[in-house]
Length: 390
Image (cartoon, rainbow, N blue to C red; front, top):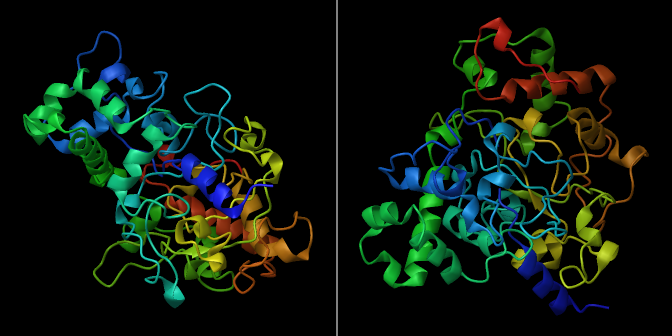
């Protein structure tokens, strides 16, 4: 049996599955990802550099994996590869959580253990908030042994220092930046974070945004779905659908944490990786926020994701257990009335806001119709109206 301290150390070693919406800019970022026959793009800003680093496949060990491998623009910055969790740079290794999108995460507050609703945790990055901000988040996957697997920050710095992006780093962060590996690693993380802060990563360009501006009309089903979302189903309690007082469009998340009572995902490949990385095998229990805060009352709590572009970011939830929006809505609606496996962490399960919502089949279908209005890149031209199969 692994002690609580030992399990905490194991989880701490493994954390770092980075983390929505289609980005309508080129993915080619320089380094190993620059297509053959094309020159490295001009880099004038820290965000330009961050984009190049984000898509540079030379920064993993072995080479071949970038941040953009698990957070691809063609999949709204989630993993386009099949499976509930992401393969790492080392063949046969997998993370234990679904890769979240980076879209709109620039708006997540710095992690705070008492700033959320009811004095709970709020903000941060990753499913459990263990990185307080974007810079902290950018550093971790590069060093995670089941992600990009670099042995140290200095090893990453050496790759950049001796690679095609070195000149841009010197230009933007100073001629002495590589003298100190810690300072240089901070600069690399800062550049990636600046890329993630670009307006193009969080464009607020969905049909619903156009609707709020009076520039689009929702269909009858979408209107009904919005009403159920805000009313009977209570979704907007965590997935805020109204603009902020300062006019900022809704994020469709309150950036807080909850234990939804999700079952374990038996298809999670993490359960079968070598015991060096997962000594508990299929008995591993993901304690979520508790690992970050040390508070047993936070066991099984995970950060509420934004629903923007949710039509494109399956599989859903931290363990990728559901593949369709219909199944997600069914779980919220009927978790407590049969048909689902028991919760992985039952003791702290949210029993007030989901589980037996008594939604009709029509109401559930209308919620899904409304969720499809949250896809960025909306245009009123009919041939561009994409409605995905359920």
